[in-house]
Length: 146
Length: 183
Image (cartoon, rainbow over all chains, first blue to last red; front, side):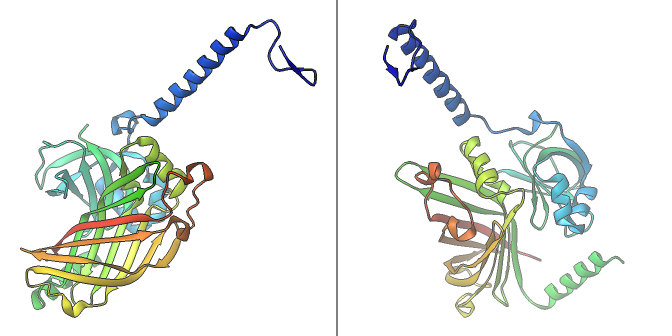
């Protein structure tokens, strides 16, 4: 083995073949980790423990102070219970359920992950999903009925 | 009677006197597309809120950043945490005005070319962004379609050198939102 300024680049007792094998394993491990990260699945609402809250409390918190409510609820998985005020489909055909909020202009809008959720205005429901913040309503996305 | 009930009553009263004043949606569609020779990246959002006042020509869009869905979870994570800092700046807003309002007849079905001037706020930075597009009025619905370019650098969004080749310096924003008459 060659030496650079007296520092051993590779230990003398290791033959080239072994070094190559170790390097190959390292490269494979890095590629594997990279591939895993690249193909990492989207996080699902059921993967996390939900914060339990009523639609009234949640929409009230956002209408009162959006900034404060964001610091508590944004990016959290919430299990929101309330009374259905509206059921519709979005432009991509996903079911959207609105739970009535603290005032008639507000509410919690839940975009469901899967079709076939049975809901009608007046139903009492609990819906679990990711809180994406607030526009004119509180937003919950990728929702499921637990 | 509480305040909200009074507001609703007033809005109803106003609506009965004047026809089709406001158009709105809370499930508007907005997407973006970044094209480079290395890769194309796109993301979709179905939770944009929009209100258009047919009489004044005021246009408002509120786009929740965390609602953008990417094909790859990792890209979505980088977009939220590294670039848009969506926990700190959870939404983007466009507030503008239709400059050729007299060309648009909201009470008659048709396709109208529209120009707006307005301000886009995102990542804590506000910039003047003019846009043009169409409004298609058909059976009680108004579909707003627009495409415009936005440079992340203009909004203080820093793209590290390692990712610079994969993210376009100008991102194409596409709005395709169906608004309904607010009655």
